[in-house]
Length: 81
Image (tube, rainbow, N blue to C red; front, side, top):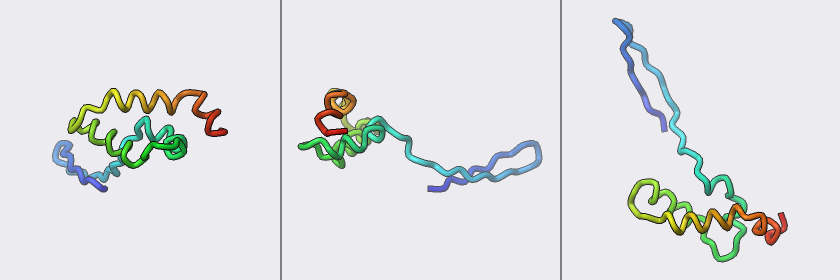
């Protein structure tokens, strides 16, 4: 998505284009593991994170548990990483 911003400096007008990217989240840092862990729906996890960030739901405890499992060295060993 492109966002146009116009700023006025004195009598000079300047237009700049800013490319807006979605911020990376903790689930993105563990995307491979998220897809590989059996029984976890990666799309649903990302949707829960997005909705949590927007304040639509309070999924802090569930996301904390999921991220804890994804970050464990044991998870990597079990997935043969």
